[in-house]
Amino acid sequence: MLGQLRQQVEFGSRVGRSITRTFSTNNRLLGPERYVETTQSDDGVRTITLCHSQSRNSLSLHTMKILIDDVTKEQDSLSLRSIVIRATPGKVFSAGHNLKELTTNDGVQHHKEVFATAGNLMKALMQSPVPVIAAVDGLAAAAGCQLVAACDMAVCTENSSFSTPGANFGIFCSTPGVFLARNVPRKVAAHMLFTGIPISAQEALRAGLVSKVVTDASKLDEEITTITSTINAKSRSVVRLGKRFLYEQLEVDTLTASSMASEMMVGNLRLKDGQEGVQGFREKRKPVWTHDYETNH
Image (cartoon, rainbow, N blue to C red; front, side):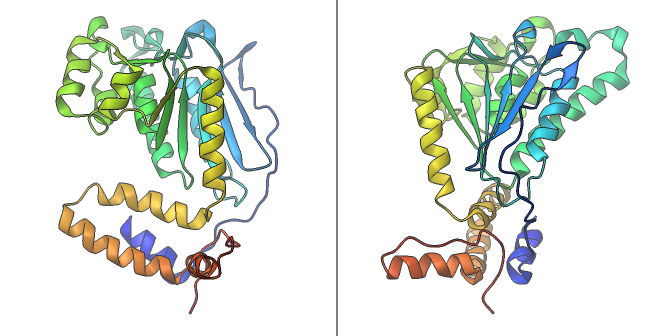
């Protein structure tokens, strides 16, 4: 991945310029039911809403495929600036995998497809070129908790809680545990995984599972707007490089990461947006971003 980052900086590879100002409501149907609704505002905020209350917004195979499609759709368009994942108002953000899909009758190959698709969804969130924010108001359980942990940021209300209760149902939350243990201290992860006991919003904040806690749903909307508008004020290409490097450096030791970071900073400064930011600061004006990977030679 570092090689890809270097290549983007060195050769100024271009992000696609197709513009989609507004997504129409994206209702994916399986029979008469609606599972996911996706819209994109003129300011580049794509909002993906889980809306199948009958299944407690479970991450069925069908729903996860929709989410992958909606996260990755036209992701290189310069008009896309951030992605928000939320649920329709209710007590549950997502209850995790649909256990009806995990019976012996479905067969091993189906089970492999379910968990491989879940892995691809989490990968899509991490590899999205724009920040992905979870907006949680309610319970995020098992794979629902995994979904929150895989997002770049998470804001939740005081009404929210987080759990990995798979062992209660005979299916240990191994895949959610991968992302959980990379967000919270090991003993907090172990407590959640072995007991299945939910943690509160404030406990999740202290443990590092969420970025911020707000009082209620109206404040949640305000905070998400603050975050996305702040992201919009920055260069998309600079944010994209930063996001990719953030995850890359986590996989190596501190000294190696420091060396890689120095190289990336130098490359970042070669971007026209990098120099535009410096010039804007020196001239005491707002920078005018190109949002692409054009470099100064």
